[in-house]
Structure formats: C-alpha cells, structure tokens
Length: 125
Image 1 (cartoon, rainbow, N blue to C red):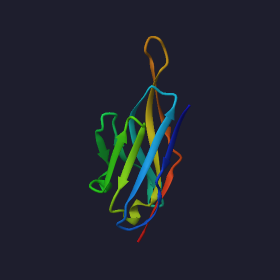
Image 2 (cartoon, one colour; image 1 turned 90 degrees about the vertical axis):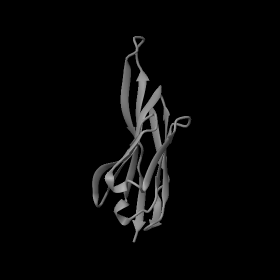
Image 3 (tube, one colour; image 1 turned 120 degrees about the vertical axis):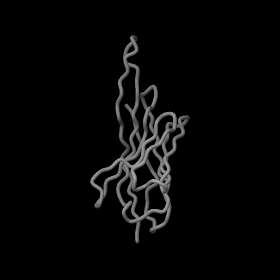
C-alpha cells in the first residue's frame, strides 16, 4: 500500500502565498513523477505542476512565474510554493506520486499513480 498525504492549504487574501506539501510512503521502490492537480468552482480539473525524479518541472500557463514545484527525494515529498495568489486559484489541490515497484525476479516493474486526499486553497479578494 502507498499513502500520499498532503497539507498546507488554507485561506489567504489575494496576493498572498501558501506552501503545499505532499509526502508519499509505503510499498514502492522509487517515485518517478510527482505533481499537483486542482479542481474548483472555476476549474474543472487541471494539472498545475509536475516534476520528474530529476527535478525537471512543468507548469500550466496560468501559474508560471507564480508557483514553484520542488521535491525532496530523501523524504519522498513534493512541495508547491504558491505566490501572488488570486481568487482564480481557489480549488482543492490534489497531489500525486507515480511509483514504481519491482514485482518479479526478471525485473518487471509495476507503475502506479497514487493520490493525496486533497487540500483546500481559498483565496479571497
């Protein structure tokens, strides 16, 4: 079993900042990509940011220059630093971890995506 636990959401005013954290634990041999989706009243569902195991990052256009994704591989944790928040950023943010686990002596690998429980980010105007 793999658990993905996230935290850091809250209520901030427009222009404020929040830092989300997401830690994966359990039965896996490595984590590949980690990232964040969000879903809210004005956002059906979109990928906000993702990072590879080597630290390469991509962002949805609307958050470029404001959000920064980072990871600490020693803690199996990914972070999302969100600056200059606007009401349009209001959503539930879900992190994910793409895990790999060796399942055979031949070296076969099972790749699965696990999800955090979601954390609410609310930005007031």
